[in-house]
Length: 413
Image (tube, rainbow, N blue to C red; front, top):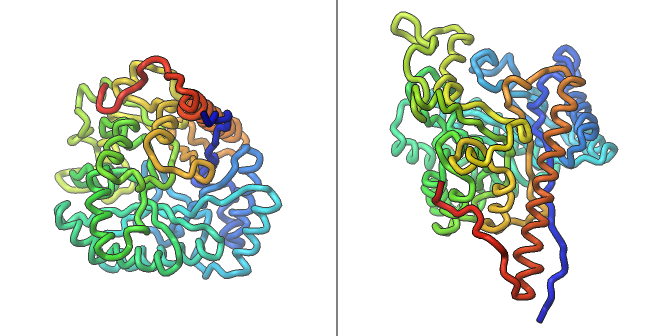
């Protein structure tokens, strides 16, 4: 009998730099862009994070959607108005080395299938600059959205994806990169009625998109940066979702994680259902979509009337809510990842994405203990899951000792 020793494997815990958008004041970082990255790296060390996920975005002077219209404004911590050169990369790499902080990947979240041709071209050009920066910084992945062409049906968007997004994946392949899609449906991204404004919002479409990519020779470039908050928003749970991927032969698609939760408001669901608020939000005035960004932001009530983002560790322990898929069962999330996905655990990143509205303070000292607590929570939950998995699936299994109880089962709530 080959007896397995107790040797749990832990994931790396990091933080997306959009958590604090103005860590470095705008008047400082506009003139010295890479100082924003240096200061975020130092801040990450104070927080106890292993890594940062570097947020890139079009500069506010170039963006087509103002911050006031967004539920969770973006952050251009990585400023690419000027070319990202080797000298700039060396400066960032030196800061990472000095602070003993890693870089998981670069994140740029935008609509890559925008129906405006000029706008799409601008976003694609920016994405290519992100790809080039990723190569210079020595990371192997970029995280983002696919988006949606609002003028086309979902089936037509598959054709648009094949024609216009696949070329981006070919550029990623040429650079040795993987593109990881976060599956947020982006229900309030526009004032229109669509709830699904990022077509890569669920396993069914991931598989459809991957099949297109396989035919185009870029199947290895398309992966998913899984975020359980979006699964909760659509009534799903992590274990069932991962089981579905495994059953379908696509468990390999998950390449990383945003650890962000969602807490469902039962009263909001009673009023509107899981489609969210559809009328009288305030984003339309006198029968037409408002031009005011602050009004446009009210389109997000499609989501916020029924749910609120959770920063890991800030929601109450709620076993009934876990079983009803009304909030994330973090321990089972980490167990299911180990039990159902073919992950290289020690090189898998858990990235804290802070979007809990009432805790999105933009003061570094006020935010610091909040992020420290969430990072510590995510780390301890992962460690607990790792210990359970190693004990049950390795140590006990090697000695023929059964695991007790039943546990959470896929496809049941």
